[in-house]
Image 1 (cartoon, rainbow over the protein chains, first blue to last red):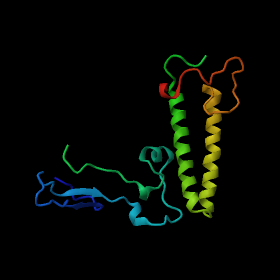
Image 2: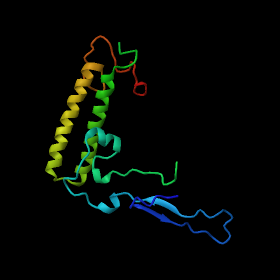
Image 3: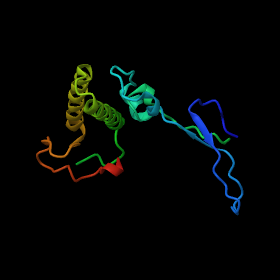
Length: 73
Length: 89
């Protein structure tokens, strides 16, 4: 169900109480953004071209963070 | 009178170029807020700010006013409030 290919994708199993009427949700996944791991941005970071930066939403290549749905289409 | 029919292709190309350059200017401003003495980025910011200004004057020369408060070329008619409005572009 979930693609494990993305190294930044993490998963957790939500807590389910003993008297929880709803069926268990199972494993939930989320993607951690790159800015968590970069910290203070060093100078001279690689950049996109202006048009590409506008489309990708950021000027700096390492901060580009797209989201692919892990569930099949 | 502003262009009533559909807008020419250059209109969109230049507008996209202006959007892209302004986006880079915004990104550099945010970057420079936290990195005040990165002279290389300041130099790049100056380049893009000047380029953005040049693009906007070129756009306004062709298609009428784009920014609020800049001098207009058309002396007979006030084009600021005529079509196309931003959502009609």
